[in-house]
Image (cartoon, rainbow, N blue to C red):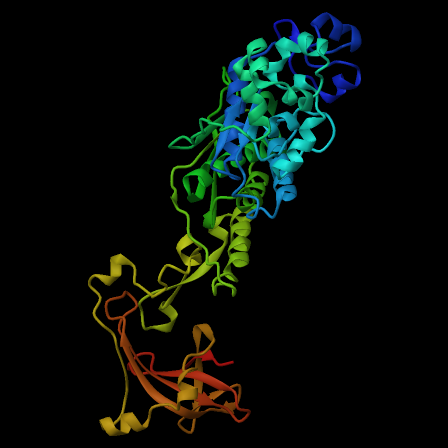
Amino acid sequence: MLDKGRILLCTPAAEKQGVRPGTSADTARGLACGIQLLSDNPHARRRHLHDTALSLLQYTPNVSFLEDQAILLEVSASLSLFRGPRTLCHRIHATLRNQGARARLGMAPSAMGAWVLSRQPSGQHRVLTTHHLAQRLNVLPAQVLPAAQPYSDWLDGIRCRTLQQLRALPRKALQQRSSPQLLQQVDAAYGQATEIFNWFEAPPTFSQRYELTERIEHCNGILVVTMRLIEQLSGWLQARQLSTRSLGICLHHEKGRHARAPTQVALHVSESAWQPDDFLPVLRERLQAITLPAPVITITLSVTQTATRPTHSGTLFPEPTQWLHQERRLLDLLRARLGDQHVLGSQPVADYRPEQANLWSPIHDSQCDPDISSSPSAPPSRSAARPRAVVAPTGTAKSKAAKATMPPRLAMHSRPFWLLDPPQPLTVVANRPVHNGKSLHLIHGPERLESGWWSPSGHERRDYFIARDANGARYWLYRQRESQGAGWFLQGLFG
């Protein structure tokens, strides 16, 4: 990349052939045959720096810009959160690679010290104490400070070649012969001066657009670019302490005579998310499930719904709902791979008839959220005018009904695990229902149900019993009390 006729940035392949930042364009062409020189675009460079800073907000809320395309992160409060400086630097490196940035990291107790260390091609780039920082800076050339470069000839003339020698010069004489900025940078590098920064602020809303340099026809390329935008989203959510469950991805196609409408990709997760790893598995499945009608030239990522980030317990023992996380992620993957209409969950309905009390419908987020009550409720279209059903034990007297209550252990399992759809008619021999040639002995009941007179299927009057055969297997039976269709039916099997 050229800036005023000289190389501003170059690739590793060009560096191997001798090209360096500052090399003239003619020299670069002579060193590397076939080199491609691009003009500098300050607007695009500032936009890329802004997007990179936005993605780095996931590691610290204090991000600032320094000169020479440098980004400052104040991470003193983040070291323990990310398990030390080494792990933190590895994660920052990974984020920078996803953003398409080549960077060299430096870590020090002072911002100027970290900036100086990051510019060194070799040696230790991470120091955590001012004592080790001074030892590392003392051996570096004095010209590493920008304010010392205009005075490099004078410093060479007095044999002042290192920062340690520069620091040993009389301060008043050095200030008279150079500038106050040089002293200020020396003190700032050694952590002996106050540094003031203008911290980068995340925008109030998030909608990022990425213009592709080449057309993309495969979903793998879209995944790489979209992950870059999701890294920026993660930084934005972290800075504003928000989370989201849905993302909108818009894939713009070529314009012209054969222009096509943008392809919309909706991304949903069942629990609040703000980290890139929360979106990556579902994003990969969603992109593999779509077919691109035309090459993609622009990708837009937007968030319309956000919520305050939930707080997590810091107690020793895990929360009771932590076991649900893996289940939710599995459901998210299934929904992304198969489609929402093909992943069904049971939804209770306020109906006493067993065959009507359960509804299979596409799983939505509220069914996966333990904070949302799971009490059954009828659909609004039927619950407004529905009378209450009657379910009561039958008997000649209240005392007999009370005595007929089931033992506590049996009452916990008064409903079967498996229901038959539809109920199976039973034959009657000697006034007893028979199933598979075995006479059933009634051990509990009757439990009367009268319900459904508002529905098209008609009024249901049933007496339910629990029966047992000679082998000890238990069955859930009911006797239809209506004259039409009267008889015994098997509706459930106990485990």
